[in-house]
Amino acid sequence: MVGHDKYFGPGADSGNLPKITRQLSTIMEPAWLVWARELQAIAQTGLTFASSTFDRERYTAIRSLAARMMVMHSDANFVRVEGLFAEQAGYATPKVDVRGAVIEDGRILLVREIADSGRWTMPGGWADVNQSPSECVTRELREETGLEVIVRKLAGVYDRTRQGHPPHPFHVYRLFFICDVVGGTPTAGLETSEVAFFGENEIPQDLSMERILPHQIRRMFEHARDKDLPTDYD
Image (cartoon, rainbow, N blue to C red; front, side, top):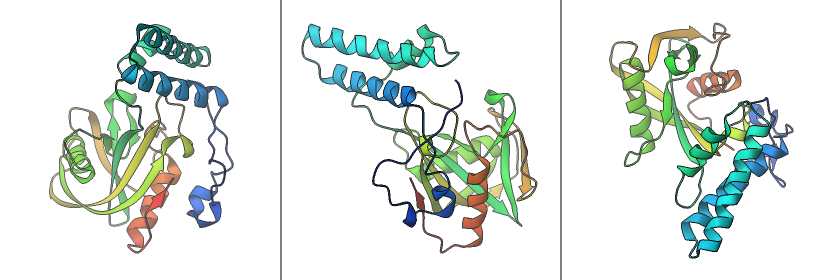
């Protein structure tokens, strides 16, 4: 999709937010993306509770409109986007992504993800049903890096749209954890081609911006250095 901005909602008290978050609070997300996501959510929830054929037809039309808006402002395929929206069922809520920051001797663990043209990212992925957030992130670390970890701290609960990532068709919350290694050997998994540690001034340029941003990596270093930092949010 095309590039985008982000915003903080009206009434947000940026004075109480972490510095790295306050610096992003004035950026605006494009209106078309906000509207398309909201229309998709309205359609998804409406189809869940609609009791008449008439209502279902109208909500299906709204879902199609949301897909057309997405396609008009991107290089996505309409059939693919509409199919993706049609797969969503139930009351519409944000999706959840988890990421694990393993920092040892001043170096952070990153992986090359095969699915994203071999770009580097912090290990993680979508949260799974019937697993707690900490169970999800330890599983992701095991699968992508070969390491067994324990979660030490929830460092951040970020709204993806307010962080500066490229546009995404769905609203996503991202949970960032500081993790400690308790076993295993760094080894690439089925979804990764390489696993390596990087110093704070050695972060690769070819990051997967869909999954991780430079300021998020810097913030994880800050949390690792100061265990008393409160959890970031929004």
